[in-house]
Image (cartoon, rainbow, N blue to C red):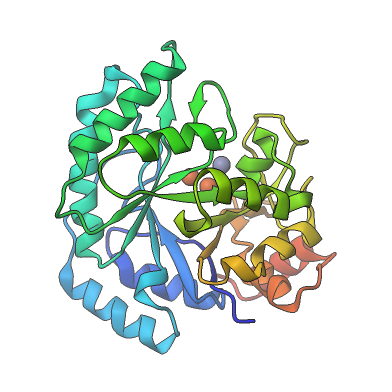
Length: 302
Ligand code: FE
Ligand code: FE
Ligand code: ZN
């Protein structure tokens, strides 16, 4: 079975989408996810259409389909709380235009955190904000991400997401994150059970993207710390079962696993994605993952 697999890649000011495609191609990926700038801030530059055009030529060569690539909104946006609401709304409107001009069809969004508000109120704020952000002309589909429930995060269970989806006048989808689901208390070793529950509450056809991450913590920890594939509490076999799930074969899978640190120079770290994708394609756990990654990037001097 051909899977749609890639990772988070960088989107740099000078190379934009072209740089992202080239990076993804070094990982053997057939999709990727970008933030249109730094994930932790909202500084954004105008898109260079020439670079976008070149990116699409390069995508063709690498068998990456336009409708499989994903954008992620910066995570400091919080539509749940009136404190930053106006900024969040105007930023998201612009972000949607940027993502559309890049030809990307899906934008992952963290629903927000209630910080002091009642859950009901926070969810209503998110609904109202999204109704203001979206319009009949919006081409990008917002994918609400399932969250770990760290602090006061909204989106830690399916009924919260269902409420938002029902309240928003325009169609939304969901981005599953395996680490977040596990940290929120869902059992990823019984994924079929989870998928049944998801289908009953929201509907499998609403799954627009899946973040594939292992977790550094036990189930229900509400921590949200990602681990490399097969090195955490979810485990390799459970993640493989999810990645190759027959009902999810059309859904892009995106790795957001941590970079591997160099042993001597602590400031140096290397992307794990080429090697994680390799072991996913082989369906075989690599017990020397960290060593292989360090060896490859140190000797290739990248
Ligand atoms: Fe996310
Ligand atoms: Fe995620
Ligand atoms: Zn996370």
